[in-house]
Image 1 (cartoon, rainbow, N blue to C red):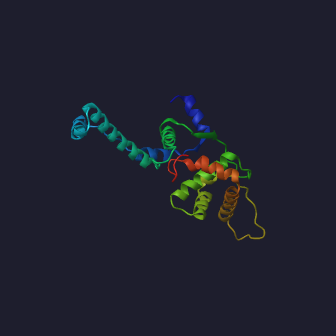
Image 2: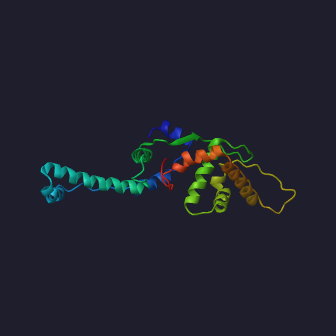
Amino acid sequence: MTKIMKARQSTRAVLFPNARDVAAKRKQLPKFQPHDLRDLVREAGGSANNQSDPDWAFALAFRRRNDQQINELLRVLGLDVAHPDVWRRAFFQLAVLHHGVGHLVSKRQQPNRNSAIWQIEQDLKLLQEMMRLLQQGHSERQSIAMLATDPKKREFFPYREQVQRHDPVNSEKDRRIAALRAHWLKLKRQRRYQSLAETVLGSCPTGNGGFE
């Protein structure tokens, strides 16, 4: 990798997909062994009695083996073989996992602790992190608390420190959690971001529904 490429990567933040999720999904995909020629010949010979052409019997046996492998691959990808759009979805998943299709980056911004203005890339980051934690089995409240108290994660999200005159007992940690939760609930109420989550972030390889 050249110095220019490294410099470009250092100034860009990956919004989708998560690199660790992609690597994990790649490891889950099966690596099939080649078909054994002798096994195929024997299988074709066993069905040759019902076939007038032995070459055609061999071709059918070969196709059956291929279909078994393809069905297994679709199963691991989380796709329904009976879905009318299954092949496009499968192709898109593999293109994302192996060829960088559909990856989304944004210019990396310096964290500003005093800024309370959310940008779309920060909304996307919050949606992505929440989906990742929810898929791991955490509740919404647990996920918000984890993000708000993680020193590295929370710097990405806008937050303006405010003195709580009416409730001085609350710590900065509690105020950060409350602020992040308030913005998360706001995002959930907006159709625009619900649609964005479903079409982009909800399509991540580790999601229940797979790519859409």
